[in-house]
Length: 635
Ligand code: COA
Ligand code: AMP
View 1: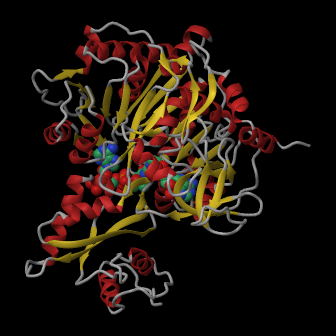
View 2: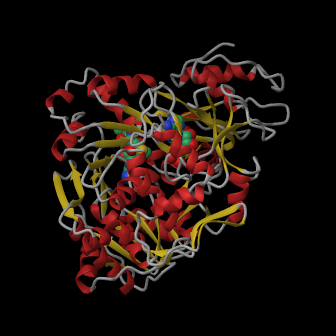
View 3: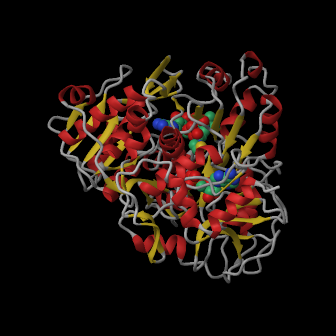
């Protein structure tokens, strides 16, 4: 008997044009594409060239105008931090989006203009994103936990005409004023937006800047609805910045057509979601998971999506996930393992789960970091549903590896996100670009072309795109994850091969943090690495070498560098530990041996590298780690 996963996978790899052409028939096009896959400008591949469509039309209008489903719930806003539950039907959401799109047009935004969205988890964030798509403007959502300087870097790279923001965010019980961060970012940036639209929240209203800021409500009152603007399938839909190996983030560019086709297809194949199902992705619109699976994919599919303004614990307690699943009859949820670790820590026996009727709940999906077996098993045991780990990246836009629940579920192997998803030709390569046999660890790579929905380039930087992803392994996309594939095709993702760390499901660059530390006047050199943390997966720890002659109190300097990272990168970096050392361990050629310090901190065995310039230095590092409460391992 044929296996639907195998058949689908083989079709997608052997005949991608036919496969994705068929998937595209499920979407609404204004003009059919000339070519499904255009490979005339290798290594740049484009999907559905010549096709015209509109992403917002496919997310909203088609359900109202064509399918007669305008009265179905599109969006549920559940905010325990403001005690609010609000629902929008497809017709209501379409009307709000059309009106705000009219407002953006009134402010001068047109197709191709960039619009930065810096907002908390409120429906207006979703409305702003879809409104940009409606008029063909390119949105760039910036996560609220980033500091003003990070926002400024993104403003300078994207050069937005308009920024859409809110007066404040709410972090558990803390009100975070957004407007001062926005103002500071605009001050730092050399590119200035023409206008800022500010959504005033009742918890804290912001002082508007004369001649620049407009109140969201006023703009809506003055505007009339805008129609969907036809765009090319290959036109950019959004830029999403993600950590690179330096302080300069990478502006991942996603197109309209391929993104729509792949995401709509993924809802059934990977997540087993149909129209009218209730889907909940507990992420943030500032991350790729929020883009793809809070906003676009569920709305393309015509199901109900939940937007959650809260935390897994503390809003008000570790039972909030179960309350939401029960109250809104959620069929599947998607979040990061760290969220479940936080719940498990507070309610180890799952007592709060038993207080709710979870009979509608069918599958839990986890991604963003490796799913540790203990968390997966705790969730399986207490929820009684399949727990599906899947692997993806900001760049890929959707899952590279998963247990495709709408095709054929496979037995779970703990520690593996199961198999390559149709469309993704995943290979393990050695440093000579040769495929490694099953079971051998190497560079996880994807043979080109990448499927629709993956990044098409970096914003205005084709050279960096090639350099970062395509140069090292010719013919392949470099994921920068190391891992292996076993003899049954199960993929194992072990670790990053660059300096990216994953802190509570948030992707951060230790290189970016090192740049901040090195800018302290007393610091000569710094190293930051991610060490294991039971809740957040990893947390950053810094080592500082001071300039000679510095006699100041080390604790003072440490406090200052911690504040610098918080102010320049943001609280989300969770940078709270640092130590002063006399020297950093290095190879004789001067490369800092971060891997060894990390292994020492994580209490793992390590081998003394033959190239180390001075082994004695490791004793001092070991003492510093002990001082920070991190274990010291002996080789
Ligand atoms: N705006 C402003 N500040 C924010 C913020 C936002 N949107 N998001 C986080 N922060 C701040 C927090 O207030 C906190 O500040 P603090 O140092 O003053 O306490 C800091 O950034 C770290 O926040 P967070 O990473 O959320 O850690 P936490 O300790 O508050 O909570 C978890 C831990 C595990 C509960 C939380 O990280 C979580 O829910 N993670 C899920 C991650 C996720 O959804 N990832 C998306 C990929 S699927
Ligand atoms: P981001 O771009 O923030 O989504 O982070 C992508 C990185 O997170 C990947 O390159 C991996 O290192 C890691 N990651 C995401 N999902 C998984 C997973 N299921 N298993 C292991 N690592 C993961």
